[in-house]
Length: 189
Image (cartoon, rainbow, N blue to C red):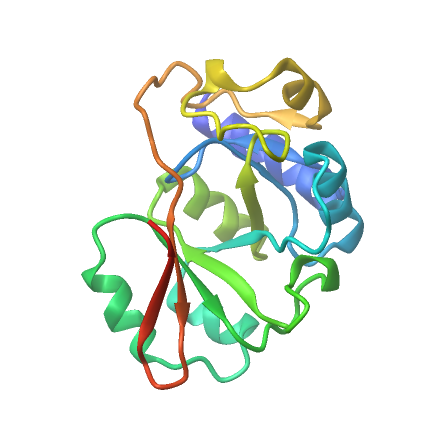
């Protein structure tokens, strides 16, 4: 199935509260509509993960951060332009997202994606998408599609065809905490 067919199928599943298995700018991920708490719960169930461990949200544009974060420090965008790897930023004050997606302190982990498939999907859905590695919690993140367990593949409502045969090894994103004073604390390299 071609890129556009995958996009259409994903939009249908995401709009119905389903879970997709899809390629990202990092590793293959499980995703859903980040504003739908029931869909987010499905991902926690598939991953056998505690809800206390917040998930990452993918956005397509800087202006989307302003929509889902109360008063973000705009200096973060200059910082992100200097990064060489996909970088997830933890922002305080998440708004408009599923409650079970955020950390207990109300913060949210957001990555602005450069990947063409993800950007296209987010722009067409007009909502943020959850992204978490396509594995059971505690197991290694799958580097390529063939590394994903059958159990995870079967649990997804739709599995994207695009890039299944791409065996390029990708790493999880760098995760940083953006402090109020504009400094950064690296939580995962």
